Length: 228
Ligand code: GLP
Image (tube, rainbow, N blue to C red; front, side, top):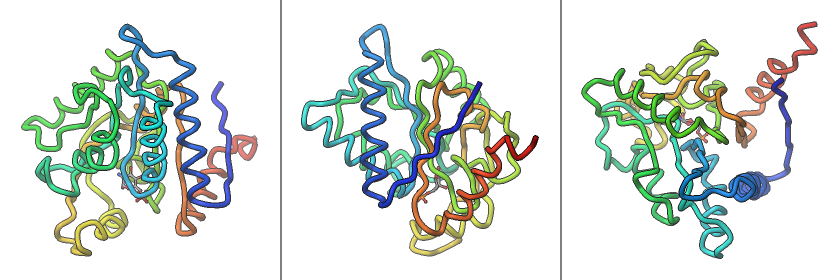
């Protein structure tokens, strides 16, 4: 049976410390090694930045290693160059991967420039399965409640695929493209809701007053006692 735990903390920094400690605890308890990799699902966005900073601190202090960790990112824009400053490849490399000891070959991110995008998505699902599934999927949500780039209305059993971004998401993400809506990619490759839900555990980070109503909706939706 799946259950949801809600942890409410006062400040953004408290969320970052809590999340980073939790991730560290899960990785250490797993005792990863050459024949036993810990698989971690990861998001982009401003929300997890503090968590990544803390994890980098733990690595630098010798309290955590990513040598035997495989990561799978949630999503990537379609058709912006991999080295574009706002690509999720750049985001992950600059904000996390280049600061830790992960083997770049183990840091998986969808290729938004693949010629055959559906094949790229199908292969991603196969790679996750070959890695033994995701142990802990960390995610964020957009102001309209999207997880990765699964916009409202996405099927709860959806798998990795191409999605068009909702106007709300294009507006929300324009801040990363100099406020210019025309520069925000309109499509992305994203893991599905089903892909996330297959993980052994999911941790969604939600911060900021602008997401309070969305959080309220998430809790009401998950409170199965309301359906009885
Ligand atoms: C993007 C990403 C989501 C992320 C969301 C929220 O749309 N695809 O995975 O959760 O942004 O970003 P932020 O944390 O900056 O609010």
